[in-house]
Image (cartoon, rainbow, N blue to C red; front, top):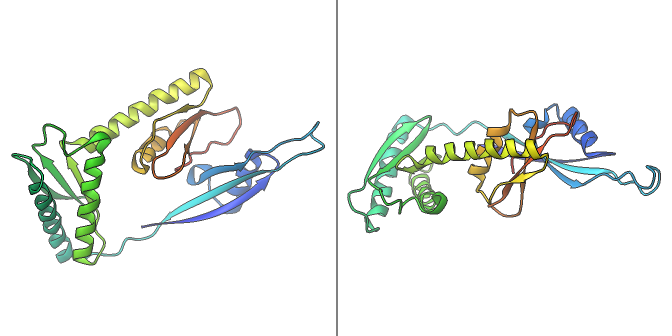
Length: 233
């Protein structure tokens, strides 16, 4: 489980505000989500009408997940599999089967036989909807936390690989042109993949842009000596 704390900092420039945040919170810029609320301005000749830069910092920390009894885990995989099978029975799909297994603490349900991609939907949205419903059913039935991942024809891994390659190509373009490059609107899970794909590149920074659940990821070439930031928004 993740919890988030929000802080605001001011300084003469954005870079100084980020440095202050890092120093006071004892974190690196890579461990924060940073949003520029107000850019700094030096005013006239740097003397009159100056304005401080203001940033918002979000720090996300992991909390231990509630422990689940082995009996509940065993029941959970059966509940999840049965719930998905009942949903699929209402959809006119032929010869689809559900394979269930535990992977890294999650219940993974793999739908096999969806050759048309109907259950995946545009950019995986139908798959995400099925996953949301099954998670609700399982957690309500067990009255304890369980994470269920619903996949079809290995779509999740194929999507991850596509996003990583896209991020790398766009990163190279940003460095070559020295101009920001933006992705299409992405959900939080896909944005995180893009952020992580470029996190180790010292010549780039990334930040989220937009309102609501769907946002773009903007990839920015890093100026010399400016702090690197990866903004998970």
